[in-house]
Structures are given as C-alpha cells and as structure tokens.
Image (cartoon, rainbow, N blue to C red; front, side):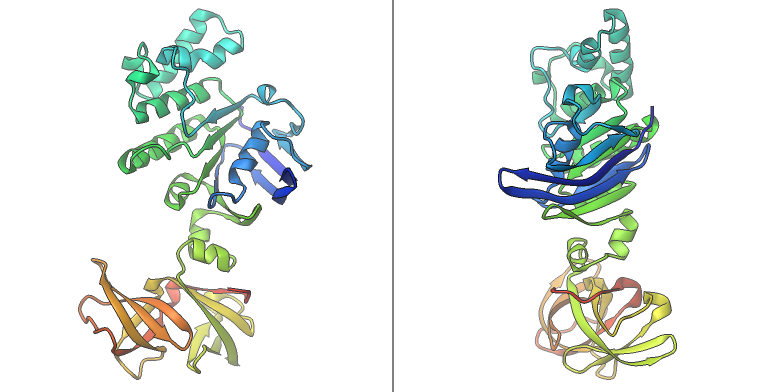
Length: 355
C-alpha cells in the first residue's frame, strides 16, 4: 500500500527549548523526501515525531489520511533504518530480517520464506545463517534495510543510515537504497546532513535550519534557484553581492554593486528584479579576466589555487571578499588587477535580507 505523509503545523519542545516551529511538510505517495541540515536543525526530531518516539506540543501527523499523532509507535507500522543498524546480535541474519514478521504473528514457514526472498533482493542470501558480528558494515546495513522492507510498511524512514560507512560504500549503498525504494514504491523519509547524498537519491529535499524548513523543492531547483541567502550558502553560492537598480529599460535592468560598478541583467533570465536585490554566485559564476574594459567587478587577486579544471582566486573587491574561478589557459598572478564578470547561467537573484 502506497500512502502519503502529512505533517501539519508541528511544534515541538525539549523541556523549555523549542526545537520545531510550526513545521508543515507533505510527502507524496511513493516519494522519497530527504530532511537535510546541520546537527541541531530539527531533522531527527521530525523523524522521531513521525515514528512516535516523541509527542508534538501542537500540530498533527497523518499517514494515508489517518491521524497518527497520538498513536503509539508500535502501532504505526513504520519501517525504520538506523545509523547504528540496531541488529540483534544473538539472531542470525535470517532471523533478524524475520523479526518484524514474527512480531506480527506470521507462521514460521511463511516468515522464513519472506525473509529469504528479501535477502535475495538485497544480495545476502549466502549470509542468511551468519550473525551480525560476522558481517561488514555494508552487509549490516543491507540486513537493516531488508528487515525494514520485509514488513511492507506504508512508510519507510532512514536516520543517517550511511554515516558509519566509508566513502565508496556510502555511494554504493545510496544507489541500492534508491533502487529498492523505487522498486517497492514505498513512501520514504531520509534524514541526513550530507547534501550530495540527499540530492542524489531524493525526489524532493527539505533544507532545515533552527526548526524550520527554509526551502522544500527538487534537488535541481534547490541547486539552481535557492529561495534565500541561507539556502544559497548551503548549496554552495559562496558570493552574495548586494545590488541596487539604477536604470530600467524594458527587459534589461542596470544595477550597481558596492564600489560603483554597474552591471546589466535580463529579467527574462532572472525574473522580476526588485530595486534592491542580492546577486548570488558560485565561484564558477564569476569569470576572471585581466581586461580592464570588461564589464565586471574590479578586483585585486589574492591567493590562487589549482583545482584541476580551473584556477580559483580569493579576490578583494568593493563588494567585499569574493571567490572566482579563472581559465587554466591564462593564469593571473596574486596581487594583479582583474575584473570579475558574472556568468548569468551560474547566478541567481535573491530578495535582500541580512546576509
């Protein structure tokens, strides 16, 4: 059964500390949504509320249209995959996978058959008789995943499931998780602090900060069109440049950066541009040139580092410290003067705020 999850205006406290503030989120049926953010942002608290390990101060949680806000955790029928695997050391791999089926009263022969079928799906049939102490980290995580999936839960939740694995195994496992989730069509919530991990497996991602969702969107939208300065910085827009419009001519807008340099922007590219805005760019969004006539921000080049595909420069400008990438073909020396020319395809326009 494929169902949706709805979190409506949830507020939560630890003692007198407010951890979540009026948080709402909808996960569509069969969708995999990640909660992404730094430690303390509220993502694990959200998972614990949905799982039933914590009770909200206010708000409701619905699964498949059924209000589960006050339903005990053991009656929510949610599959959970934890960071530390949470396997029973005294049970074999097969019995670990079959544990949830046993709790549901399934006959021994049937639960053994279902456990074996799931172990085959995760590639662990040959290890069915082993114990957790005899498995690698990746194998343990597959067992934990199989145990969560075998009960055919309406909702599957992951709590930093790959944090204990090495880099190569993390990449392999996230591919496996995504493939299994898609094959089963199980509605899923994935908690992580790893942006690459979240973006690579998710249909949509909720970026969280101080108990609030700052933006909830597809990975592509988050990466290319952040909604605010916090999200922009989070997804790698190193440069946030305050701008003020000084002229408008149809589609074209001329805006001035600190230091008096005027730059032109097309509203057909960026959308409606307010009189005051923030130009957000990654290092690739500012092209470095020694041409003094180029229409860009005057800069004094500082430290130059080699990235393989480009040289990266730390730049002093009237708009503050900026980071820009320059061509390998024409390296410039530290201390030299240059212009930083915005590359429209690598920039976005944000509303002004405290940055």
